[in-house]
Image (cartoon, rainbow, N blue to C red; front, top):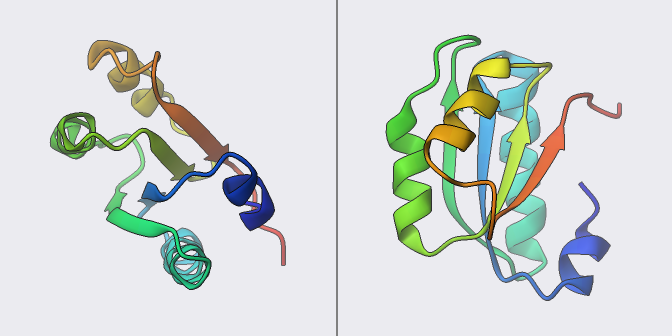
Length: 102
């Protein structure tokens, strides 16, 4: 994710949801550090196993007032289903990162 884009939209808080695979956990942790270094508060950094997503993480984000969520995983259709079920398609900026740049 480009930190310049975050600054452009004047976002000040974000959540990061990652797959529990090591490459995504490391990427999420690194992104959290980059965001915090840029003055963006990371309110939630959560991981999940592929195909098994805890809806409580979405509910917590939804009720926190947070509106920017970075999703980092290869692919997981379950999250899209839960996003719709939790009515989080409007008023939220979902940034899906499905490949890492090395």
